[in-house]
Length: 280
Image 1 (cartoon, rainbow, N blue to C red):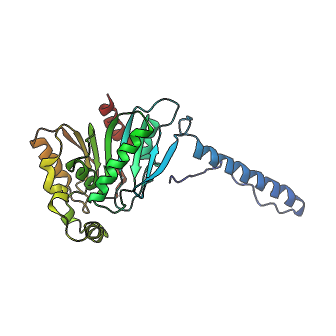
Image 2 (cartoon, one colour; image 1 turned 90 degrees about the vertical axis):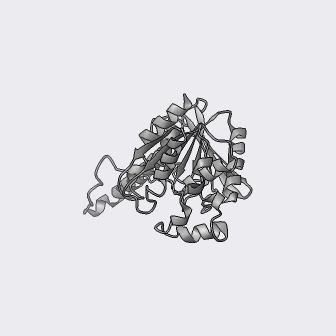
Image 3 (cartoon, rainbow, N blue to C red; image 1 turned 135 degrees about the horizontal axis):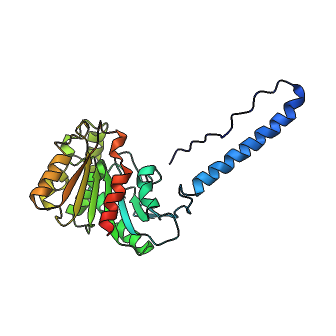
């Protein structure tokens, strides 16, 4: 959920010391509260550009929450984006924030799922991807232009590609966590991975071991930082890009800065530019 910040245009009234002004002060306070609530309602229901906020369609598929967020404005969607959340995320993760919100404001619909939450790309999450895509296509007539993933979502989405889900034209991975046997630096990841696979990760579900099975006709964009010690670039994003390039696939970097949680990873301008190039 987006955090709303309200900055009043005028300073609060000074405390009135005279008893005769008490009623006036209370009236002004009530009016101020009404004005604040009205401002919040406008902020919530109207897009930043002044366009109509995008409609949200919700459902459940095989027990998992799914969501389709339609673009702002009244026009048809330019395309459909599938979003794969990271560890700790869910169907709503980042959808209403400034990063994925930039896609919505630029004409794209976004479909998302719980993906069995901390699934780390297990078979259930691959089935979730199939169900989500089929459902989203029933809701709108728009081509899929892009899959977007964050951290754990890299494993979920790449495993979906390896295990038969129809590939998109483009894939965008932010700090993709794909070496599942070396996730010990990510808090709680080892426990969640063990629970997702009921033990050790099978070889065909560890994305780092299956890079040669990824489709080479997809355009890949990878966001990573050399300062990320949770998901080290030399164990994850680096091998992904180098292997794809060796196979003749188009793979490019967007180099962020700082540790895993650094906000430089979430660059809305780069995301929208890549989506636009995929929609052409």
